[in-house]
Amino acid sequence: MFRVGAHVSMSDGFAAAAEREAELGGNCGQLFVGSPRGWAVSDVDDADAEAFRDAADERDVGPWAVHGTYLVNLATPDDDLAAKSLDCLQSELDAAATLGVPYYVFHPGAHTGAGEAAGVENVGDRLSELDVPDGVTVLLENTAGKGTTVGKRLGALDDVVDAAEFGYGDLGVCLDTCHLYAAGYDFTDAASMADLVDEIDATVGRDNVEFLHLNDSKHPLGSEKDEHEHVGDGEIGAEGFRRFINHDALRDKPMVVETPANDKGDAWNVDRVRALRTED
Image (cartoon, rainbow, N blue to C red; front, side, top):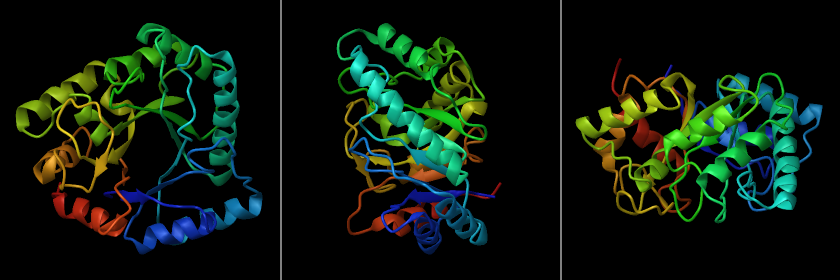
């Protein structure tokens, strides 16, 4: 079944987040387990988790992903920041496990001048320190490439997995369309889409791409600017999304929109994705 949804708020509780997802027409979803711009992770007790799972199961909404806080930086050369990031990431992973959420997505971080190779090694080494709960896969998200962020190249994500103590299975990849486009990966015509899939196959592998973020880009190809636009309304355009979401390598992956919270909203974007979907 085609699975598409939106990132939803858990400010009214986890069960309410599942209900909100169903109301906007989504049948999979993503949420934070704390403020995305803070270190605090919400306590998730057994009652919260059961109510969330019951609401999601009743409405057939899943799979879900927990998105990590934006402050996490495993690529940093700063050991204190890395330790704080690991503590937060572990807590978010444990919350995902309690909720029964199978995916945890995070941004690898920035090497802040230490160099990409050092940043990749740092992320791999620090991931190796995690106690990844059974039933949860940690997903590395590709980046737009601004500044010293690690993960602009798909090969860098594959290098992170190689540097980690455990490999694909416990680890996987989440591809964000805005980030891909801003990083210079075009997929708006048949030839460029084929090139992108070839690079996926040659690096992380299509089977290890577990989740997709569908966001249009406010800025041109290769801009390295991470600013999302409504699906089809940005530089990628409707035909670019049509190619991306219907390609055999990607069409069966769960897809979530993280589009602007303004006039059109999540339901509009989910409907737009459904309208661009073709039959098998």
